[in-house]
Amino acid sequence: MTHVDDSLVARRDNVRQSFEFRAEGGDDHSMPWTKVEVVEPPQLSSLTIVTHPPAYTACPHAGRAVERSRRHRSWGKPVYAGDASQS
Image 1 (spheres, rainbow, N blue to C red):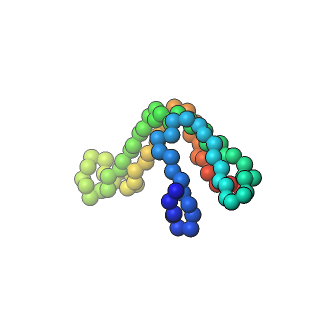
Image 2: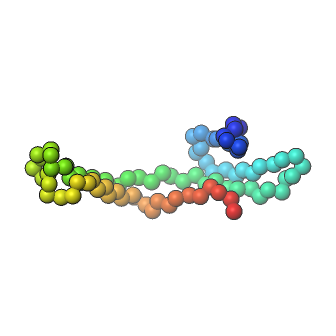
Image 3: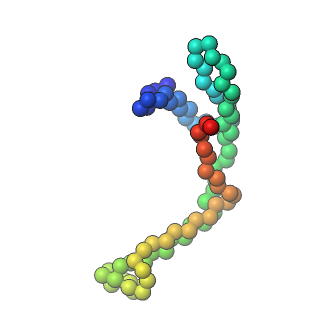
């Protein structure tokens, strides 16, 4: 464990299977176990990047669109954000 600000942090690298954890202190063994489930990482199925160069570049499409870029990506399966906080 290492100190980060005013917290203790335990890190497990290269986790390949699900596990449970809990914290204990002194004679307190009442904290419930928390399960961490390992899942396959999502696969990127497509990526499209559209750029619009600024007019001063003199590129063929310069000045025809707003000076910005746009990205669109698709995943092979739904991607959800996780929440590691306890309520």
